[in-house]
Image 1 (cartoon, rainbow, N blue to C red):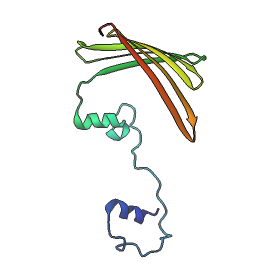
Image 2 (image 1 turned 90 degrees about the vertical axis):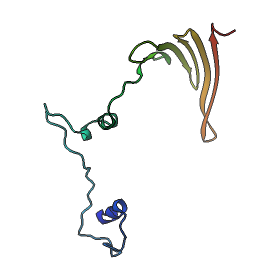
Image 3 (image 1 turned 120 degrees about the horizontal axis):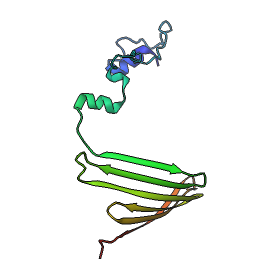
Image 4 (image 1 turned 120 degrees about the vertical axis):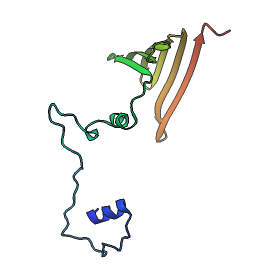
Length: 147
């Protein structure tokens, strides 16, 4: 796409204003990005140099939210162990858990313990079928608080 065509798309001008129906050979295509160079050492970068979350933080300000941490590890035998936790900054409400997961080809089994003393189990399958993916899950939950 030529630069004049891009200008029409972005500025929504009338196509007959500056385009005579033929491609302009004299204009080279400009495929470069409009990004500034990385900041020099010791200088603070602009919002172009940081991710979208940081840009959002600069525009809207930072508000305290939920802290979340997750740690995963897998063995070469398709066995996984995951621990996770979340809390608000005042740490009055902390939640977490541990998950054990085993893969058997397309099948998987998992067992979770949550910090509110609940146990969760899951059995599932993910396999290609008829040009798509077939997924099925069976979940069970146990809590000492249930009657």
